Amino acid sequence: MEATREETFFSRDREFYRSLFSMMLVVALQNLISYSVNMADNIMLGAYSQEALSGAAVVNQVFFLVQQMAISIGDGLVVLCSQYWGQKRTKPIRQLTGLVLRVAFCVGIVLIILCTLFPRQILGIFTSDEAILYQGMQYLYIIKYTFLLFLLTQVLLSALRSVETVKIAFVISCLSLVINICVNSTLIYGRFGFPEMGVVGAAIGTIISRIVEFLVVLVYICRKDTKLKLFSDREMLHISPELRWDYFHVAVPIAAASLLWAISVPMQTAILGRLSADAIAANSVATTFYQYMKVIVVAMASTSAVMMGKTVGKGDIGEVKAAARTLSVIDICVGLVLGSILYMTKGFLLSHYALNESTAVLADQLIAIMAVVMVGMSYQMPVGSGIIRGAGDTKFSLYLNMISTWGIVMPLSFAAAFLWKWPIPAVVACIQSDQIFKGLPIFLRFRSYKWIHKLTR
Picture 1 (cartoon, rainbow, N blue to C red):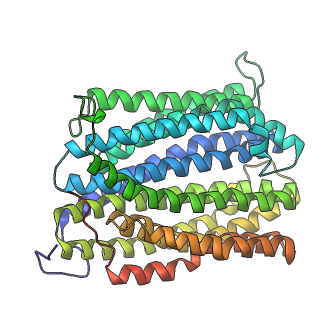
Picture 2 (cartoon, rainbow, N blue to C red; picture 1 turned 90 degrees about the horizontal axis):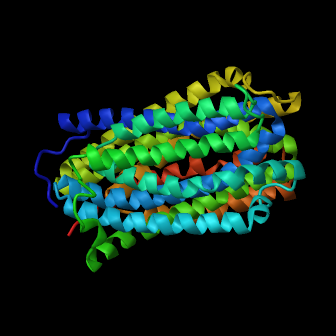
């Protein structure tokens, strides 16, 4: 690729800004509302009992792995398809989507089988408390069936996002949230003549929400979508060996990087779970609000990946560099705002939980740590997983996660918790430290511009 216009530090393409901010806003709102489906379970169960909250939190560690699988499978699709969309070629996008739907279906079935055969063994990784295990197994018994629906829905939404169709994701998230809250408030506490079901009621609310999400996106694609026309012919059933190789060549490093990082997160939670019951409850509360802010960062990364892929597909390397610099500055500014909001609202947020005094004090300390971590994450994730990966370099994140997570963070966290016996806030700071020190290698890689790869045939 060669530059076709004068290169400037910031992008001067008005269409770029128009697409960026409209897509980022919709994706951020969609992510916020989508995360609120799980948040509704968390808050309502937190008000119901601490054991029910902790049981659901343990299962949500398993769902987190499922979520990362869905994201990595979908991101591989977005990286390739957005470049084809930059060239306005939709046939390869339909073929790739058909392939990835089959992959997601197989992954979902395997996950359901594993959770059916080994529920206690899986949840036992994260806690040894029998009361929490009992609540968690009740929750997992129902929630495991949402894994398949979630994977398929996310693949379809990724295909739509790659061609800049994002409003439908916002609509289905709104519907899902309303349904989940209504069912939860009815079944958890036993209102309107229904029995009091506690954690089981929360699981039923979630599975109904996931069914609605899948059906609505399926109807939209079949009846309303005019860009992809996924089910208009049999192209989704056939894919060339070359295109199949392209997908796995892109997706495998993304999946490996995501898996390396995702496995470490429940293990980090397991470290806290082995320290005390207060630690797992306080961490659940703190990370809930952290994750709530994080969905905005994820939206920045998702939008950046689409914008960079589309720009690379057009072939203007000067605009690729200018767009990347623009996005990186926006990322830093957003991170500072999010970190400040999280810190200043921690007292108000904690007031909604029925926690004992020691757990509440610990949760307050952990949220303060998360506010600092938020700033680092808001740079490293959108630049590493959005700009660099979206432009075609999918291996850098793999190497970075391998070294930072398993070479530094995990050994440091285990040593802090079990060898040095540090206080819980210090252990959490070690667990989250990669969100800060990843920034330097990502910045150096970003400055090299060696991450610009054209992937289309």
